[in-house]
Image (cartoon, rainbow, N blue to C red; front, side, top):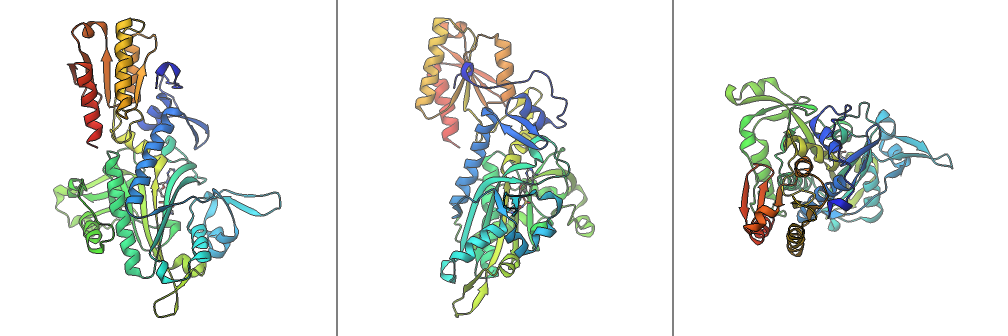
Length: 445
Ligand code: P5A
């Protein structure tokens, strides 16, 4: 992409309505624009990162054997009356009527809808286990939408639902989700710690939230500092192996880590004092096992091996896809702007031409652009007639992890400059070496 043709409405001033750094930087970098409270348009740069995050979620869900599908954003109230949640859900549910005076709602979550699909089509235990998910817009009429995409009213969520014959199988699905979520967040450059939590209106006793530690986080958390040493890394996992998934669950949840709703002072005080931490975190996902709550209410039964009809065991599992962009920025920025982790960066590498219009510099930039593109990478080429300082400031603000700077002086010596956004360190090297270096970094992901 050439910056001269791109729609990147960066702001020089700090927008006064933004209280936290991620919101500020998303507005300043021209990623989003608020349309009304808690509702945003995703401008090209923001949309590109949203898609990257969404793709990682898709890849990791499918790796775990979960099937993508798509349900509508508008639902009829009928199913919610059947489950008893229509009245219970409260003011967060956006309700309206269609022209025939039928009660409709904008989906805040889809346990009822998927259970209705399940009961219409599945009748035997032989069709289990089954896990399907979607990545779809949700609406919750939050009392205090704030912090940009962090607490929106309209937000993008991955919601997955498992159907199993037994509690044991459903707990395996729970563990499988935990493992896949660990992988998902790590690929985005984030450490998200599973913490025992409260299930709220979704229901059930077993639930963990995934929290990214950040001062601006909305949740208060209590944990043993040893949990921050755990990483999933690139270990092999067989998602069908119950014992292996249970082992990972055990490893990542046996140390004390809880949100304030389930915090237990006595257990916390049993941790050695120097390892006790009270902090704040951003909830980027939550997994639930709620047994037969919805299958009982909506009569979702299958014929078991002994011929008897039994309600299925279920769980649901969410990732805050749009919120993740805020969380990633909270975790990765400096005073100049965003620093994208390589896994989610909107463009792989910036190219800054220090002397636009100079035949040699223009030619070298075009050649770099072509070489990077031929290797499957997406460069963002600042080909505007701007001063170098302005170009660097824009690149720093939008946070591409790598930048190649091209100028007549370097070209005389046959070199360009490769700069890491994270460390600020630069190196002079021949253009083809710079391309190789950048390609190597992404190939290793
Ligand atoms: C699990 C999937 C559920 O809704 N039903 C289907 C279950 N869980 S949840 O915890 O309520 O939401 C899942 C994740 O969505 C994100 N989230 C939000 N993101 C932005 N703005 C909001 N207002 C908002 N509300 C929830 C969170 O990351 C949450 O973990």
